[in-house]
Image (cartoon, rainbow over all chains, first blue to last red; front, top):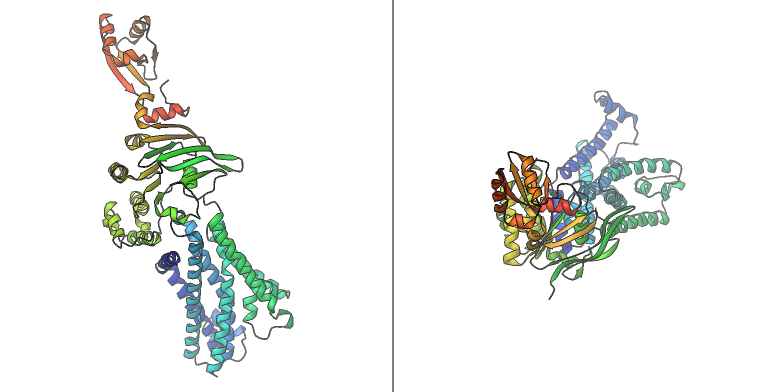
Length: 262
Length: 308
């Protein structure tokens, strides 16, 4: 316990003092603001011309009637895509930077076990990701209130917020293979490429109707209401997701414990 | 009582078709400063990584304090301080924060440990500076501070004086000597600065092409290092003839001086002076030159530069 407390304190310090942490928060606030802007254009179609290209894009996209319910669906779909990249980036950075900064060799022969170092890093991935997810939703709700979205309902907000956080958890489960790749490739470029590839594949595989069996498509499908029957998630979808998570987790722990650290 | 603090039993490390280290058996006794010498790529860092459990030997075993050196044996690392190759620190964190990390990871209760080691390594004026803004020498000091913060009983250091200025090298050398003599700290140190190692190591191991080719006490070094008498004269050809005729083993070296290897002459160079003066060819130089560790090392490893 003392061991994991020490390594957790260390991991939190590293993140807290990094510019990247604050950069991701600002980025997620910005993306959330963009979602609000899209809804604002929906409410005021006449303004799209004044906003230039962003306005035109927004007016081309249709999210149904501009109200709180549709806005929350938009936020949820947003986190499925942005979250996959954002959380993937967080995991890549936390694990990969130890190798790219060559600091890993200093934490290999210390009284704290390597497993505890890995677990601490995963705990920090969770904390960081939950903060980003919370910032994204909170800022989104604030934007919704500022642009004056109609049909506010506390019940709907709670229901969709719960779904939103479940989507975040599903995405979080996918951070472990990224951590493994960051450790195995000893850096963060390959895992970042992997994250982008999985996002593209998730869209493609979703289109051919195999989304419920592809781990990286599952969070997006969970956040999409009214999907066709072939894209409905079932128990096996969640089993696949959990298995992917466990493979990534144990793979990362095993790599840190047993692989030669040259 | 354990006398061999660091011990390896025929450890080898092979990477595909490359044998980085082959059947290396060495032992370092308590309070000893063991200088580990070798050329680049000789296998020094690979050996150190095996000692620290960072890589697994292909065969053989390394022991520290009679316990198998392994990443799983976390208790072992409480007593060991290490520095492997170029030290790197978290670039966005200050010197103090970097050291606080290691205070926590070594479970040191004394909160002054960071300040103490900052003073000991003379990092006070850089304490609040980010690691990324430190000079090479100060980064090296920070690396050493991380290795020493928990007052380890065993130190495993890979080229610890890299990047330090001469004053810094002297200071670190004195500090390590003090630790070994007064606190009984066992130090395993690799270096390519051979003259430096000969000044403070108590024992030396020479590694070449992955094999430990020699282990010796530094007190033996004087006996093993060859000596020669260098002679110069205005008429070098005449001097050569005089000395050869007298039956001495004379050779010309690259600097056009004469070299005599006979031990009776090396111990009594005045006999040569007398001989040459009497023969009408007085010497302009008589110098007994002793092979230093560097030359001895090069000769032992079969490289150029050794005394023939």
